Every structure is written in C-alpha cells, then in structure tokens.
Figure: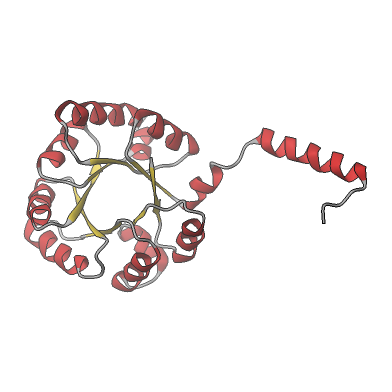
Length: 217
C-alpha cells in the first residue's frame, strides 16, 4: 500500500521522505490555511520534495471553474494531481481534465455508487473518507471493501485512496482490505511504529546491557 501524507507542513514531509515513507502528498483548503502560506508557493515546494502525486484541490463549485482552476494548478509541477469534489460538476471536471492527460483525485466520496461514477469519469484516485463515516457510526471500512469489489469486478484502474485517516487501525484495515493508497497525517504514520511491548522489551535490554558494564564503542 502506498503512503500519501495528508499535510501542507513541508518539514514533516521532508522527514518522512528521508525515511522512504512518502509516495505522495494530499492537501486541501483547510491544510493550506493551517500552513499560513500561499497555495501555489507551498504546493510548488511540496512537489519539489516528493516525486509522487501531490493533490492540489480546486475551490470552485461549478465544472467550468474547477476545470479552469485545475489547469492553473497543473502548471505548478508535473506531479500535480487535481483534486475535485464528488459532485456532478466535479465528475464533469474529472472527465475533461482526465481526458487532457491530467491526474485527478475525486474527493469526499461516501458511497460505492459515487466511487463507481468517479471510475467511469476517468478518476486517477477516488478518496473515500473513513473518519467522517466513523463519526456517524457508519463503517468506513465496509465502503472500502465495496469499492474494492466493484473495481476488481470490472477492471477499473482508478486507485482507492483511503482518506480521513484518524488512527493506526485505519491504516492496518485499509491495507488488509487492499486499498491502493492511504493518506494520513504525519502523526498517524509515526504512531504506526509504536507498541507497548516494543518499549517494554527495549527497557529490559537496556537494563541488562548496563548490568554487564560493557561498551560496544
């Protein structure tokens, strides 16, 4: 499963990139706002850090506006993925932009029917939002399973990009189901390395080593 980092924090992206933990980046208007930087400036810097897809989101609500904004965003770098919402206008924009040879990430997906439409419209990625479904006591992972089955049934090339990741369990379950990509905040990716038994075992090894009075160096 590919790891995308869901942030506009370039320092956090660089750290994970150095560890080989970044296959791409996703941003959205809220993340750009948190960065406090100009969208084109920060997106260009992110694209220089990673070679994989970098999602930059349009803000227009009509198809014509999304297409125009998408073309402008695509000029920032060759690895830009244009992000559009899963609305009828978003699907129209996806169709046009994908036919122009651009990568398109269709976001805010909450049903398998929506995912099917996005694949038919030529989406490169479909972004089902797990955490927001969980907030409503709905099973976000069931949605991933349904999309995986539908796409496999018909050979759709659209990649499932599990989004709105809140926990390390989200990451594990998405990987088990067969999500092509998961995009998560840097903190969640860091937390994947943590386990209480690892810490406990390490403490025991350190204590035993000190008792030997030896030094490797």
